Image (tube, rainbow, N blue to C red):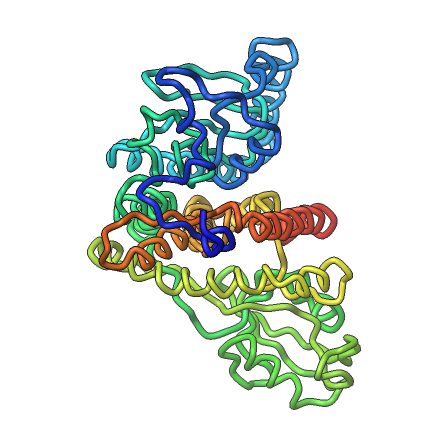
Length: 455
């Protein structure tokens, strides 16, 4: 190896370098040596799954009393959720279906493009139950935190038998690698289209209407006047309210202590409620000392029927604004400053707050109670778009990180048609940083979902 190659993070070779290909020095038919614990963790973080468990008998707990107890506990939690809140149960089932379809996308495209997939599991951690068909092991693991498909040779770090090298992800063409790695997110988008069509065809589309819908339970002047959560404020002192921003502008034209009539729509009826405006005392607010009503609000919407053709078209076009909002949301939520501000209580801006499936499931219960199955289905569609977008961010160990590496390799190959393999091991410190950030994001979101539930 030359000096330049020694310090270069990339190496141009037709196959992975011998120092990262354990099969290169093995006799034909001889099994690979068991990898070290570090090698296993490294491979699982970047590639998913584990091909050579240290002790399969220790990992497979499904046949033990502990495994049976764990399985019964998981089933019991689902049964409890189904009894206590059917909408939340429906949402969780929808999430599990989305997770399964995500991995099915990777698995089916891998098989289609000639890659070898050796594992397809729902959940992580110790195996509860599994069976093998052909060359693939299918099963369920203890922790229901996701799923994975193990495709051989995701990077040049992976240890692969010599006879399987031709069926690895790393040896396939750039279009095939991009198809396989993006298939999970594509499945999310396809599922979102199906869900949106079901909503639009059965109930119609949500369209913006004049007014500001009251969100969180009112406090202060609004509560004293009798304003309720779910009311739509149409006018204040005779001045029309088109949305949340306009409502705030109208309120601030008055002095604190002024009595105004609030026209609200409640259950199809219009009511006039007199309110004595309070004073904004929220620290850090740009409107401290000005008139204050004491409500949080959002844009008012209502369902309007559409034709099947319009429903089909809208189910596709709706993806773009939702995807754009999801992209902005990911950038905001990944900002450690925003996470810290929420943990310390410095902000309650829901658009920057991290959350987990626990929080979203809580919201699904409230949406189901007010909007029924259409509301829960729409929430599932929006969640699928968000996950599909987030998963393609160019960060290891996300699928988008693998897509970025494949694209980089293709650019470096140029017109030479000589395969170029990125030394992904050099990116492991960066990948570990991303994992640490995602773990911090998850734990912060879980804490907030439990301590300060979303409404």
